[in-house]
Length: 303
Image 1: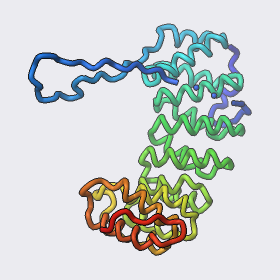
Image 2: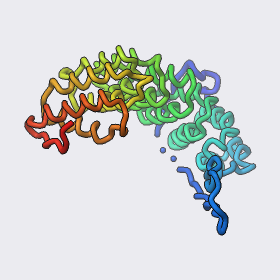
Image 3: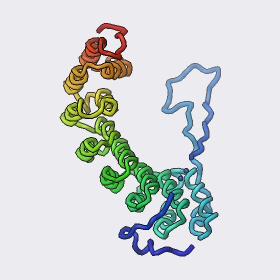
Image 4: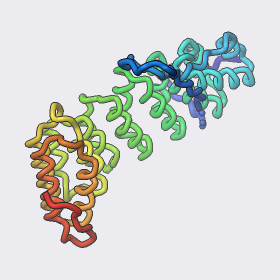
């Protein structure tokens, strides 16, 4: 296959490319022992992890063949192999640098994501700036799986992408990657109506930042805020202390709407047994206090 000028200009020029990828797993049988008294369980006793699908020996050769049919079949094999297909990452990266037909380009990007290999991050970061929105979306989804500093840097920059889907995917991925350094960027994104930023802030915020998030109640739609506040309230005490959670429950309670009552009831239902009794009491009381609001349900139990 003839290399395009993209190979030499990689990282400096953007070509218009156009637009899409499932892993098979085999359940393992459980081992049982008959006619013997039960013993203390060993780690992962009776369970075998799903077997990885090995990469076919000729897959890399097919990727380098220059034949589109063979390249497509090799990409399918790498995708199914997932992490076990990491050895094919350099060959796929080289194909993307050279340039591929539109549909194969998107398939190659998605395949790199399935390998979860940070060796793909640089080329995926480059494709996250492509003019074609479908490719940008695919690149952001893929780079969120590769992890590492290049991925986080790319996702932070993509919070201001012109496409709302790209912005949302970037915000969600930053939360999944536990990118604490991105909290300030996520607040800016939330102010610019990237709704997914609320949940990621809730996953990442320190107590002061969590209170700052709660301070947006009333200015950000409540159904957006719930994704973040739910995350905050259910995080362990080592991350967010009880006092902060009680303050947040109080802010929600002050709204006094049917929506807030339903949210508090949902948190009440998910609350871990015997966990943080003072916070649980605040939630119970808030449920009762908001139960008379229009659209709310009657509380089942008093604290």
